[in-house]
Every structure is written in structure tokens, then in C-alpha cells.
Amino acid sequence: TSQNTYSQTVTHTGNSSVTYAIGSTNTCGASISGSTISFTKAGSVQVTATVADTDQYTYATKTATYTLTVSRATGILTLSASSGSVTAGSSATITVSSSHGGTLSASATSGDTGRVGTISGPSGNKFTVPTTGTTAASVIITVKCAQTDTYAEKTVTYTLTINAVYSVGQVIC
Image (cartoon, rainbow, N blue to C red; front, top):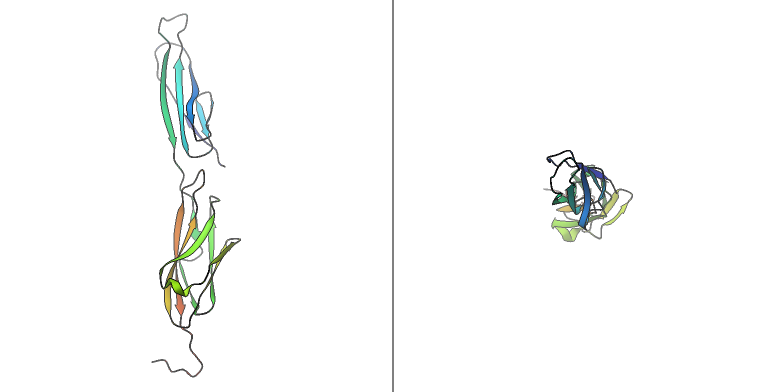
């Protein structure tokens, strides 16, 4: 997983240093070094900042607690083309590129969805979309990259035009 950081600053009176500690909540894989919080995934972490009294000043020890929420990033999911066409009864190939490693899936989601067989893949970065029948149709294929610890779910669509099959000698009017 990727690692991100957040630097924090507490304003205080006196010359004491501030110490930071992780509290009772830590669902984002957080750790603290000095005033920098590192986290490895989305979630939240409770942080407590403490300023201690020193010998020179008579300020009481003060603490402040807050919760830092880490959201999932938006990954990149792209197709090599947003549409394509095939002859009915043949297969289309959809090439996908994703930046965040979530599980990829594809399904026919609207249009004449009954004209698409079981979509296979991904094989590498490609899905194979078999078509059925002999007449023209249009189908929307939705490709999804599942949510991970660090990235939100992402979807893109592909418009597949299925061209009719014509017999030799068939007259088209």
C-alpha cells in the first residue's frame, strides 16, 4: 500500500515542546514521528498533543485531542476506447488501465444486454465480450475497479455496437 503523511502544528504559550501520541482509535494504519503522522490506508486516527510544564514557567500540562480522517483516493480507470463495434456473433475486446490494484470486473448494464454472453477476464488488462444473434443492437458495458484500502471504487462505461450479420445475396433496403 502507499504511504501518506500529515504534518501537524500546535500553538502554545511557553517554551515547552509538544509531544504527539496516537489515541484509542487507529483504523488507518497510522504512526507518529515527531509532528508527522504517516498512514497506510483510509480510516481515522485519534491524536493527542501534550504540552508539559517546564521549570521556568508555571503553566499546567495541557492536552488536546482530535481525530484525523483519511479518505480513499480517487484512482485512475481508463479504457483504450470508449466505444467500438463488432459483427453479431463475434467478440469484442475491451482494454483497461487501472492505477490502484482493485479487482476489475465487467458487465452488460444497459441496452440489449441479452445480446452479450458471459464476459471473460480480465486476462492481463483485457476483457472479452462475446455477442449473440444476427441483428443489430447496442449495449453499454460497465467496467468496475473495486474499492481497496486506499482507493475508492471507480467505474467507466464502454458502448458496444453490434452490427447485423447479412447473408451473401441478401438485399438491404
